[in-house]
Image: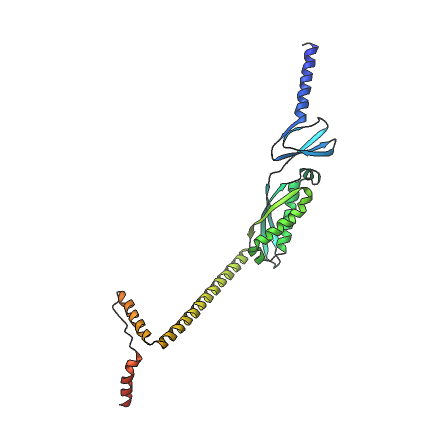
Length: 253
């Protein structure tokens, strides 16, 4: 092989090496943070990115939403109840250059700040607040974590408390409390029904007092209802007024 051919192959190899190290293709959800001789110059993407070999260095960052599970945390609530609480955090990168420059590992940093904030907020709440005001606690967690991660270029969009593990003794106590609450409501509803029924009976008595013939109509209606069933026994009420003369005669004798 002559010198010209060797020189040609060297040039082709050098050109291919330059192209492989100077051209990058970024997807729609990716951004490239460009460093030139160690200094941040700009953020590019998506599409084709041209770099200066041996001079430029690119760090690729994804802008897609990341779903992160917060490990279960042992927490003591404000009313001294021991719990295990875990959560889920949704966040994404909004400023790629800050994610690369301001923090070493933004995923790990977000995870740690989520764990500490979860312990702090749940520790300031009572068990009843945790069980009944979950939306309020979620909003407070999201607001605090987002404030902490904003300097890193990370936006926390949603934080949800996923599961609360109660001790067995506390579960039994809550079950007893719930049963007592249901019984209380049942007694109140029954008392309200008796009160309403007494009011209606009082109104009916007033109507019958004004119109005595109404009791006879009611009597006939009762007989009709009894006769509609297949009963072998019929109770026939007798007005006291019919028995009064007989009772007076018996007293005279």
